[in-house]
Length: 115
Length: 114
Image 1 (tube, each protein chain N blue to C red):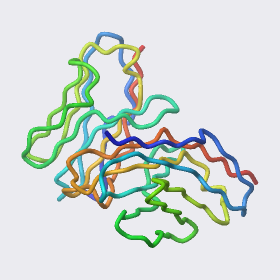
Image 2 (image 1 turned 90 degrees about the horizontal axis):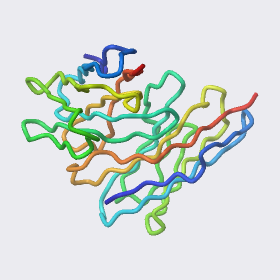
Image 3 (image 1 turned 60 degrees about the vertical axis):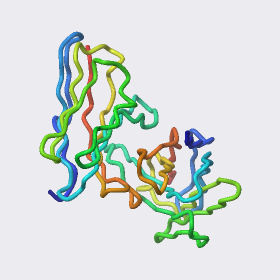
Image 4 (image 1 turned 90 degrees about the vertical axis):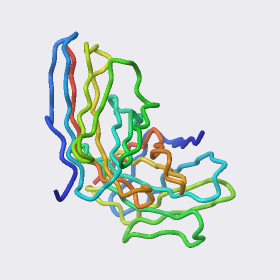
């Protein structure tokens, strides 16, 4: 069974600074996808960034980038130039390429951006 | 529709009553998922539907929970004889076949059992 671990229940960062959220996962699959989702107080889950495991290049989306280390099964999220609107729960998630199992989520990291 | 729609947004029910939660997925998405999120916790998988295949019910916590999907579109999650521990946010999501591009989530239904 696949598992996703987020070891930081809470983090805070000053506005305009950079913060990195950690995620590790366990799987025997060789081909899969990884995601980071953001959940603000509105509780709407928003897809932040997606990584295909067979691509070595780290995904980036504007101020959001990942550090994907396949051998270490690590998938951290870096937020640059943090903004107050980045305050939210962040969830790391995994799905195998076969698509026969649902997304598996970590327990989340609560990020607070401080003015 | 443009997004995943869930109703009601909030539901307060008395212990022992039955409740129905509705999810209307994005048109064209063949897969539909239900998750439960207890206060401050992660997402717990409940059930998912993929096209005309039999649903994967492996995450349902008890036989009080059931779900159906009519016509490959709208889904209803039913909780019978609700208990206080059923209080949570119930999130629905939909995706294309494999989910490799991620899921689109609805805003959820917050269920409170009193």
